[in-house]
Image (tube, rainbow, N blue to C red; front, side, top):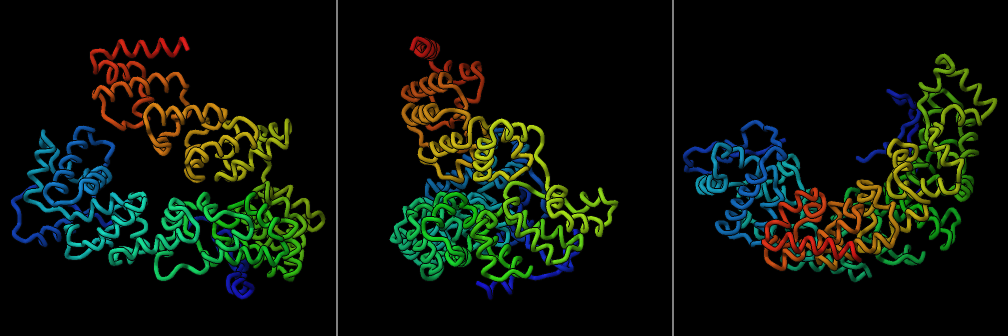
Length: 581
């Protein structure tokens, strides 16, 4: 690990525009569109058609501006072409036609003057063969600019690449969300060149390590490279070490995000480093449960950053071990970021490395709760004189933290003053689900989330226990914070209502978390009415939850209740029975 640290940490300067002494690693996460030509007599050479379409300049199309009727007709026409004409399976044709909005927008633009979009597109398809890989890749979650370079040369029909389809079906049948498969193809397209049975065998190899299918799906979606070659040794060792610490094989599944990538070698090094620091199994278990971001956000990069910086400041490895042992929070992404900013700040104003090491190592606990101002802001109080600021900090090191660290606003201080423990718990909970310390989002969230931090955590866990994973629930409560302002009992009742009345899976509320914010009366009476209409064959099955709840009462009565002759009477009976109970 020391060898890696020496190669990683450089020492150029820190300047806001230019670095010459200390190089700060980044803390943020690291079009060509083909169009159809206009409706014109078909060419004898389809290759000329494709060349011509590729040569057209890209345009910007708004899918929101397309009328719903036109969009539905276009989807039906594309489905009919792919399924009936081209012979794709029903499920494949349906998924592609419903999940390629940009491609549909381009099609509609070609026949926008026609009154009957469906018939016009059917005629269009007869004379203009489309490149089926374009809507296919878009339906897998890729944008035109992402899949432009992935389009196979010389092929326009999906059936001409049966190996690709076979592996795509293997992933879909295993349970991978089809809209996430595109990222896997983009990162590791050799997965889609395996012979029949190979990909399925590789997936089941990871199941044999003790992981559930859902965990394997999350894992491979984030790290498709795991399916290349033999089973990843670093990952196996990480899994073994976590088991030694008392973690289940599926524990990591709750903290993996498809938006991130993971370096298992670096995660393994992080676990080994914590052992070298002196933590025993119980202490490491507590540390990782309290701050999972230490491992999974940046794959332990902060260990390299912080430890490397401390070594360069002149501390020896034993001193670093002692420092980290007393202040394990410094390895978390937020603390490491603040530590690095403070280090950069001090070098920017010309502070000696000796004083820098002394100031930072003696105030490690501060970095967990405060973020820093920029040097320019602080220097305004010293007329831009860096020497004066340095002398002030040397005389009183605590002055650095008073001057450079941002204070919480009055509303935050008020909450803290009323009950400091509750405030800390609430901020810890919010940080755990992705809010940044002292950010505007954090300040707004503190006002919108009601209850103590432990209460919010219990409600959050209630949703996870209902069948949703950690990252999904985090995303849901950010979209609709008031979800966690309800008791566990209410949340459980609403989820049970969804399952029992409609037979919907809990995943159906992911796109509409506000469902959990509606009162039980509205949910019960509308779900009862919709269930009755389905039984009578008067309503489409599996309508979205938002369609049923988000509309006004008048609109619901018009488009649901009144579509059946006995609907109004049944509706009134449902309302009366609910009010009487």
